[in-house]
Amino acid sequence: MLHPFDDFPVHQSSAPLLHVASDAPGVYDRYFYNGHDAKGDLFFAVAFGVYPNKQVMDAAFCVSIDGVQHSVRASRLCDRDRTNLEVGAIRIDVVRPMLEHRIVVDNRFGVSADITWRATSALLEEPLFKHLENGRPQMDYTRMTQFGEWTGWIEIDGNRIDLGDGGRIIGCRDRSWGVRNSSKAFVGPKKPPQFAWFWAPTAFDDLYTHAAVNEYATGRSWHRSGAVTARVAHAATSTDSVLDEKKVDRCTGVGFVPVWEPGTRWIKSATVTLERWRAEPLVLTYTALSRFFMRGIGYTHPQWSHGEWHGEFDEVRDEFRHDEANPADPSMIHLQNVCRVEGGGKVGVGVLEHLVIGPHEPSGFASILDGAA
Image (cartoon, rainbow, N blue to C red; front, side):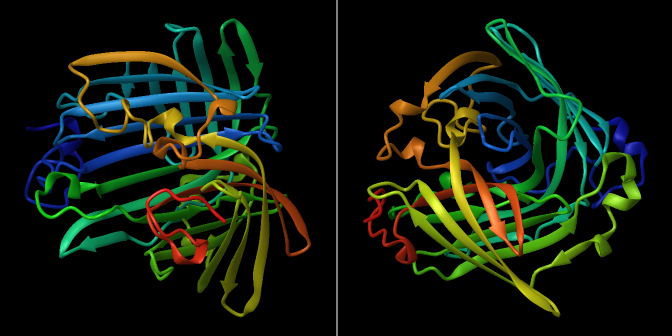
């Protein structure tokens, strides 16, 4: 199965590029973006995934404003050309790789957008995420994260939101690919789920920080990474500059201490410590200002989770009110929180993502969904 990309010298094996290296059903390739103002009054996110072994390509766009999340979701049969980044109403244009992406949502359901993300930082290639369970790869993937600014507009039921000409609406994107959640395909003894995940991309006037932590129930980590990189004007970026590893200060250690809202698994605040080579540790305090429930773009959604077959084509719009959120509902414990961030003599804004299922001793969680004391 050949593709025009096979005319470029980029092969990693003897097979054509579109041949998938693993037969695991959890093989995926995903785009993620978020955007927000400084207080989280406006928050939007995009998820776009390709699942070649499931023959699924799906996408979701969600806008949170005035306490309501408005989502458009679509899924289609994934054909041989995986460079066609359009599913239903949602399309991604990679205008300039690593530098500029455009997302278009056409007005089929009363939600539309034409927004452009432009890079204002180097790329952060995170260490390989690899998690084995009884020798089987549950997760084995690479992810890169990058900061940027948004321009364009979003419209909800005739009400247009102007994102400005850059700087007012910030956010980040990530690209990840590999194998995720492949354990669903195996038959064997069942055991209660356990997963603890924290992710904190943060913007200050002159720099960005990043932290990512995966922990076992005991609090011991199986993935932990952090980085600091300069904030630059988009006009000063180029492909060479954003790929320059020397522009990224890799942290030698990352500490994460969450404080939970009583009775929930929703973050109230947190302290992140970034240890740096030959520099004082950077201690950052996060205070949550607003919540975004990740079910809005398919994470933990009961019907529209990622990579599920919805026939050759399907798309829907739905809404979700924050004041109706139930902290005991498993689809409502994966959040991104816009936070005020203080530390190192600076004040910034960050997005603190968390998903904790099952026991987690540092948080005092003992069962699958019990809340904080």
